[in-house]
Amino acid sequence: MRIRIVDAFTDQPFAGNPAGVVVLDQPEFPGEQWMSRVATEVNLSETAFVHPLPPGGEADYALRWFTPAVEVNLCGHATLATAHVLAVDGTVRFATRSGVLTATAGDKGWFTLDFPTAPLAPVAADPELLDVLGAEAVSVHHTGPNTDDFLLELLDETAVRDLTPDLRALAGYEQRGVIVTARADDPDGGYDFVSRFFGAAAGVGEDPVTGSAHTALAPFWSEKLGGRTELVGYQASARGGFVRVSLRGDRAHLTGQAVTVIDGSLLV
Image (cartoon, rainbow, N blue to C red; front, side, top):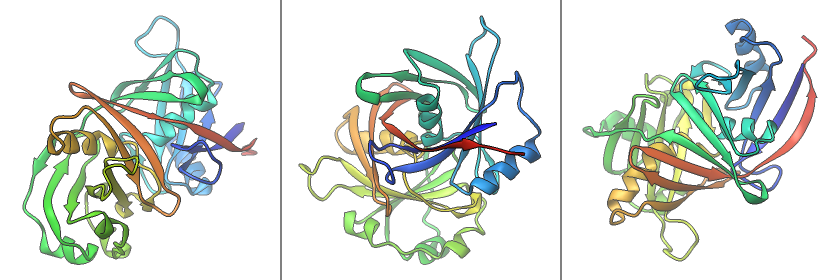
């Protein structure tokens, strides 16, 4: 069985966010335990499993995502990686735990994902969480229902970049992850906001580039930046990556590129 490792939200190998992609020939998913074991073996933030659906339905493929620890409801970079592996021409529809998602191919290897935006609910800052992060927060929100993250706006870009959270302590929280973000220091620097994502509770210490987090970041920064609907985010992980976001009502269009770096076979 063929498996690829694809770097997503980048046009260069060894950058962006790597994902495993397993395209299944069969018309249904194999056992959940097997998929979980494969994702654990691959040991990336997510591994995508996809199989074709009968023609004439609401979707072309069924798609699921697994971290090394859990199955997740929504994943951007592994969906982008899957569209890249499938060599999508036009638009492909995926049936997922978050409804039908689409990926549309553009020029020069660009793909645009159509995802639901994440509703944001303001919550009181948890002093224990701030202590675990080692951060001061301007505001704190909870995102949901597909993501279930905390989103914290920090004082400035430097605070986001310099953060060194206690990942072991973060793993004790029930939420999928924690997004930290701030406005870009340089308005002419090529991006509007910066972020990082820590998903210790889902088996992901720091995720390099998190497409699903931008379903919350886009409406958050749109409101703060005068209602703008076209934004660029930079995720300031060690690998780093850019996510172009367009807001379309209650949908977020996430645009990026991808590069295959490993193409091999599963022997079990």
